[in-house]
Length: 256
Image 1 (cartoon, one colour):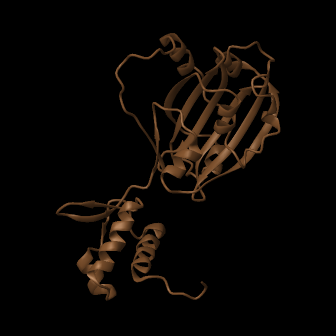
Image 2 (cartoon, one colour):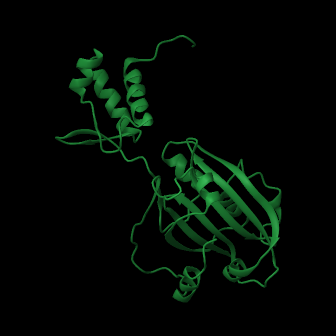
Image 3 (cartoon, helix red, strand yellow):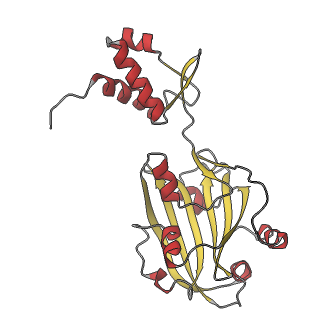
């Protein structure tokens, strides 16, 4: 109902979140303790405890036993060994995903794209370029090439409403994927789209995915180095994977 005052614990949370969002509190900075919040804000200990507890649960704050509460590093994370839908990654963090489509056109495969997809020069592909946002902040430029005969409806899909990853998974299940991660200084267009400084490095994921025994997509995923990180978890051998020569071939591809 309009005009109803927020609970005191929510007011405390909002004030701390505002200080984090403005940059007044940086990752690693100490957050006021329960005692300090009680004294400075004239609230009960229960109210201060609930505010800090919910800030911790929502990922804004990390609490260290015996030391206090500190601003968490809010950089987005992705698993280096898994192929995930970026919208699902963002939703799992409790944040909002949105995207804007820069390019959605049919082209002929040339050079490294034809090589990566194992097709003849001139084979029809769909070229997609999107910017993905997390809570309104750009975190990824997706530059993807898709075999046109694999996904005939790709040109007509609304990729502002569904991600290419989700759409392609609905066309046919993912059989296999290959990824290479490298650091790079992005070109001017990527810098502008990701709102990066000219000298800021990016993390670039080169990714191929297979269906029906052939590679059907090749993507470059650009991420701002200061707002994104990749994590990994080792799983012992036991599942089939592509020959190592394929990985070397992908690593040798030039970044555009």
